[in-house]
Length: 327
Image 1 (spheres, rainbow, N blue to C red):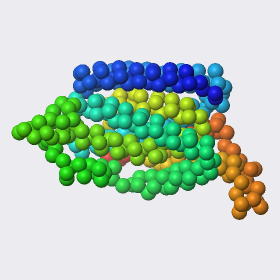
Image 2: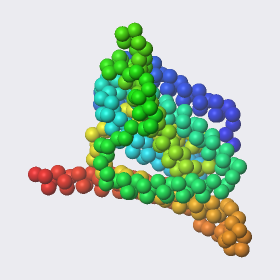
Image 3: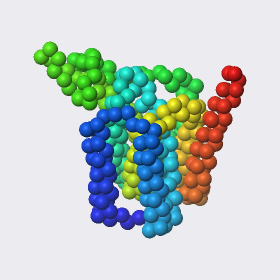
Image 4: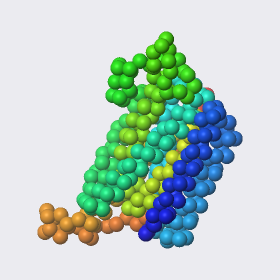
């Protein structure tokens, strides 16, 4: 795309500005947002993502515009799946509703930082070693298979990460909530608050999710700028979505299957791309498989949108069917 340093800086400044505005507003007035407030902010974020994608389409061409929309929809879908874990974590730590918005905002900031690091590492690896697509592709295929295997397990189960268990064992933790503070003095002793423990849990979760999402989007575009902006738009509005459709998420019973199919599809796409780009000594007499088919971005976009629509319709239909049977 030939993105200049100035464009990168402007994008970073706008991203930080939006986050700082959110931090200042939420930090000063922790509260449980109303449905109208959530819908308003979510509409703005989605509209901005669509306008940005159309801008990329107009100024950089349909190929890059399609790559952005495919990446954004995929990252948004994976982010929605993340909400399941966020809901479980909130329930596990009994986070008061008025503080959940702040916790989510901190989790989103952590996710942006971690994904920015992974995006930079991924871009450097791709530029240096084109065979890294084999690793990305096989990892996504393995992740897809794992999602299918875990789809029938109880979503309410949550095993605390090693870091959280270590902190509980070696550091004093207050049993009471103290607003959004991370540390508090009780009986002359400095202690961690449950808020800090929840933030650590979200940070570990964000790290694990970044391992899936970054290889997935690099299977749709090799432009670091599009990878970054797709992640930014996917994470912005996630907090409002949590409160707006928290109950609906429990009805998307086939979401794991849909995401598994998408990750499998992108994994296969990455392997095909790697076969097309690399000379393998044990294939075709050392000439590689340069005739391996390349899946065009329009086909990827059709598969992504179609999968999401089928997943949502099938999930809601099953919910209605189960409700009728229960009567």
